[in-house]
Image (cartoon, rainbow, N blue to C red; front, side, top):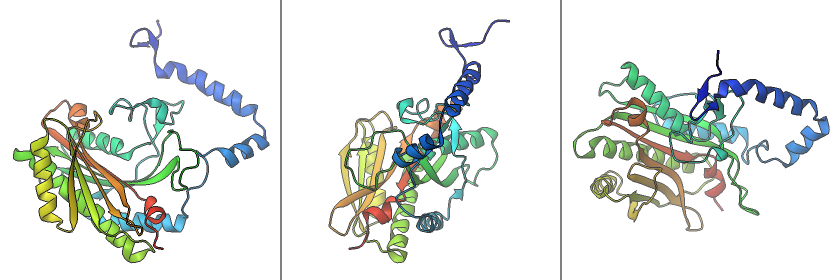
Amino acid sequence: MGRRRDGAGRTSPSETRAAQLALVREQAGRRRLVDVARQYDTDAFVAPAPIGLRLANTLDRLALDAASGFEPLLLSPLAPLGASSVMAPGSQDRVVSTTRTTEVVADPTNVLALECARRLGSGSELGSAGELRLATVQQTVRAQPLPVGGRSSLSRHFKMFALAEAGRGRPDDGFEVDAVARQLAVHDRLLDACAAELPVEAGRRRAIVRTAPGAEALGARVRDRITEAMPHVDVVSEAMDSPYYDGLRVGFGAFDASGGFVEIADLGRFDWVARLRSDHRLRFVASGFGLQLVPLLFAAP
């Protein structure tokens, strides 16, 4: 019986797994305890986070409390291989891949898209409007370069607070406009809660609405809704030229104690769930918030 092939004569991941596991066993077998200790001292992938665990737990609680209208999920630290680079345009080199057809989660919004597609396909576990609202807090890992001599707030692994909503499109971009307003309100409440409980200052807020050519009407509707629902937020517009988003990206943040603007949340519309379910009527809006950056970048003087 012939060997199974993927694509143009390439072996499948299951066929190479045994050889990869054997290679890892051989490499680990040649290591000494001093090698393990040296890597722990020098490798940013395995270094502790720049904030303490008690503070991290407090931030988790504040984030989930702010997202009371969303179902909280505790995701696996692993995702299917290609969850980042196949679903969204990006390089697999920026993801920590394993030898078991999985990868360490680099962006929980990709995993939330998979969960939304699974639930929408089953036709169960949906809200009364047939829509899903999910939230998670995830320690993510990204294999991307760190700037030499950069800020100590930058790390290869970090806590990300993520929100996701999926459902069918509605007239006049109703699904997207409602989802953007709802998720920005969560992030706004989270900054307020952090300022009330932690020694941080997150003052005046700003939302940057970025739209691609052809999505100007959606951008205008989003700007109008933010201005109406969040009058304390400055709303500015920018053009966007990125294949990662499906026409719309909204940055959200606050001015720190020194008066500089920090864009700490990133929200967008994506076509991931529509592609996963092969249904162009489905919509997916997700956002990520750099949770552990709050005490590092908004520290009160």
